View: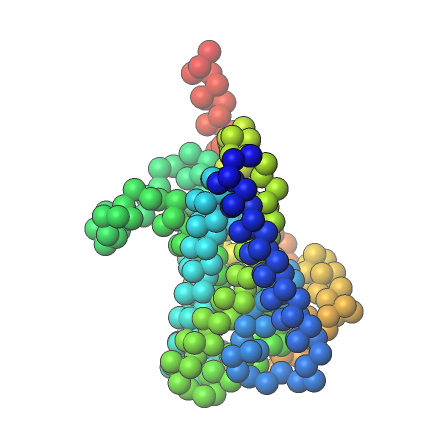
Length: 324
């Protein structure tokens, strides 16, 4: 191992230690606090706790492979830009809540953002499978020349921005107390700052997992052997999460929250860490629309993924035939 690789690993190890310490201190503070007091501390701690919820944990399957799909430095920068996009999402939500003053009124906007985020993730996933050639339409006009051509960085930022919508509708007590306070206060600048801190809290555990994954890379040349497999994993993870987020926005929350996956996961949290478990009491008190339950949303979810599976299989079969 050359000196440069050793230096990178030292810095990554130090970063992992710092991030892990922040996570432990944050969770301990959240666990031992007698009540939730709205403010900057709760905003950041609530963000850290969201990693354990069934609505937001799937982000791990996007950001970690995304960082592993490139060289260490480039992969880490992509993860940071993903976090920047996610943080911007919650900054805008906080600002909007401070301005509009009420979550229920904003929920329709959130539903549309979920649909948009799901479609964006599906487009990115399909393009990663090389089924379509997808480029951001404003890339050559708005972005400075120094960033044009660096599509990995741009895509990572916008993935974070759109996928940050995952879990917005999860009735985490800390999350709703925080944003309920923002809505009541009615000050957009305070809402934006609290939202930004909440976004930073959400990205800390994700970055920790990214750093751990990068530390597992023995050498740069080893990565190239698995690069195609990692790329396809990222693509299919985006397709799966995109279909999930789209369904969450289009059909509402009932189809997933009534499932055995969600109920079992949340029941485990109610036993082990009740302060961050999703609260049915909060959900009912806010009169949030339940949406459509039953089998139809699951059929749509499976149908979207199946259609892309068949599309990919047909393209690969066609390519193999052409090479014979």
